[in-house]
Image 1 (cartoon, rainbow, N blue to C red):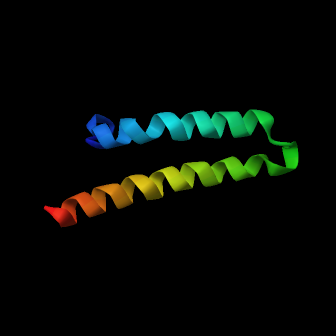
Image 2: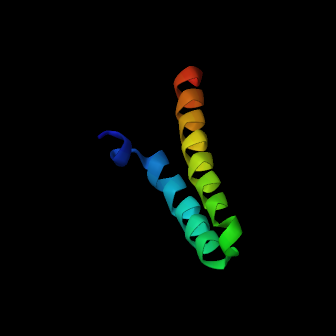
Length: 57
């Protein structure tokens, strides 16, 4: 996959992954599903970045 060779992916994955792991560790059990929102936010941010980059060229 070309996604894993993309610098934008690696720039974004590190902070989002750290945030998701920390939330999964420190949130109470009833709120742990909120960590999925971090993952969804990551993909939304990544694809918006790619979209805007393609349209600005």
